[in-house]
Image (cartoon, rainbow, N blue to C red; front, side):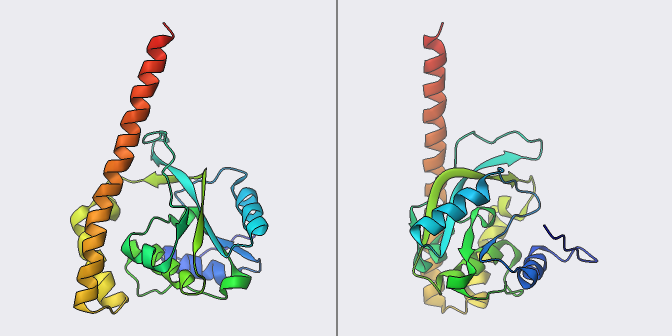
Length: 214
């Protein structure tokens, strides 16, 4: 393992690009400083990619708070397959869960002009321009930390950044931006409702199970 340090805190995109500059391996994976991996995450993911000859994969994950407690205990479901068109409508790939084969994708760097909360989405769009699809691994292989007061928790800020991302970073026309923004606005709350229903269903099951034991 080789430790690379920057003289000042330059943000995640510069740190990832520095890591990419130094990386010599075939498989590329990122772990944000506040997220966690289980010990067997890389082994399982690389084995799966080799077995199925895949260019990109991503995994299920659980959300947790700064105090270490899990938000729900449920693994956040990920789609079996993603494409460029799917990601631009709704990004379901957490950067700390993903991995790609550099021999298949080629050299890539993060665009420093991408908005901070959309840098992951922009990077995966760049990856998916070079391969047809990515494949999801349903296993829980990551812990994604939730910070109170973060940009992603401020819905109004996220909405403005999303629109700016379509218009300025992706250089989409107004019509295409409205189209993708509308889909994003509809899919995001629907996804949250579906996951909340799963949590309620699990809670009811556990309560029923506990009651039957007495």
